[in-house]
Image (cartoon, rainbow, N blue to C red; front, side, top):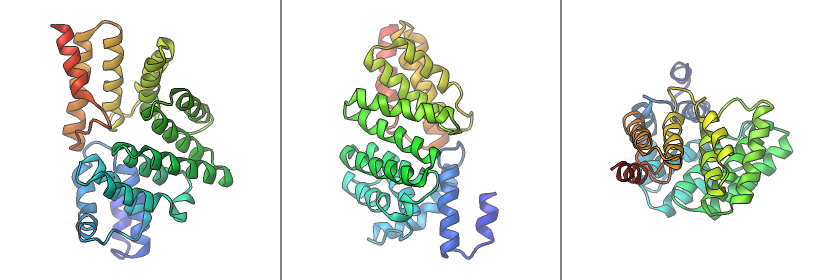
Length: 269
């Protein structure tokens, strides 16, 4: 329904920009939508290349994420867009915290972890003020992502547990994202039982979502841990195929499937 809604609005107007930002949030991680996302973002990418990023903070978040995922800009440029948008009051006020989460993810992808955690702290405070369970769970997950990347495993675990508890209380999405991070954290902490719980979560990922690629990546790590290198290699290669075919993405900061597949293939002989 997003295309139909956009068609009813004046192209480029404030309501159209609001609707486009919401629509991109709904489809950016859905399989088969990559070409449409690129076409919607193309004029904003061109303007940003001329030093004129979108004034709408939601569209600037999507610009930052697209640049990061596709390796189209230097770390500093991505950070300028993500931090500029992520600290905007309109993003902080967004009901479910989706835009803050995307800004954080863009920063993690380009290894700007201090900036990412700062945005996560802002998002958590905003969610508390608003009394939004969904926004708080979203922000807690994304802070866990930052903290895991910088090696603060215990703090990351605490944040992820908050996201999981709040998810059980009504946060409807993200089983694949949460499960994949749980598998990674649990393996790093030597907790095979918790890693198994993460595997159960990732298997709930929607079939048409980027979460499916994360699911296969997480299962590859577990197969390798459990001494099944053949199954690990197959799962890692499937993760890479889904990212490439469905999203046109191959970013090791999102999913390092290539070294995982190489290790598994070597172990399999």
